[in-house]
Image (cartoon, rainbow, N blue to C red; front, side, top):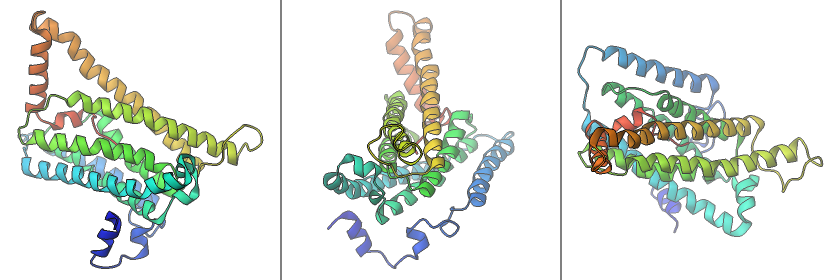
Length: 309
């Protein structure tokens, strides 16, 4: 018995169709007014908290912060396993092209998993709420990435983009590690590999662009320029979903590379001047990473080390 079948067998009741299928206007957060209104409320909330906290000391909120992060880490792992359990047999039977491009790869279970991933993006907005209460700086990358990723998932659900599982699987993999890191460092654990989280995200976006660009090319070639330019077949999506996905993921790659260079390369160049040539790298690593964790695991988030999707 698969994990999905096991979970369904122990489900307390049957859900109404609009809760396991994406039905525009009926499924929660499936209307433009609601989605944009929710994200506008998110922005108003975080900046409102910043203003309210101006004359108050930072809040630690360690227990709540750890609970939030372990839920997202464990939830990402569970969803990743369920997603792979569904897509791997499709790849085995139909091949990678059909698994990525055929409309048949958008199965009812895959759609439900995409919906769960979409809703996780709203839970991840609490990352910023914690940062605001802790009086950490809110970078453009962090706020833009969190809000735009919810829109990305929404657009792909509407467009029924068949290659969504690739981007989502990579994002979930990163989030399993990333949210565990924040959970552990919130409890006082010392982690030396913080910068590798950003490297993982950069690699994720580089890989993302291959199926996204290929799928977009295949879709437009087959639907708008069939017989004019060569293609292997159509890739299921829509004009809006394809173009928005390409543009947003490309911007993510550029923003995260810039963040990495500004944060870690700058630190590596400055460390010898600060600590001396003899022990520059040793002290830079010991002080830089320890202080990063000690000053708050959420500082990484504040600077934009958040993803996905």
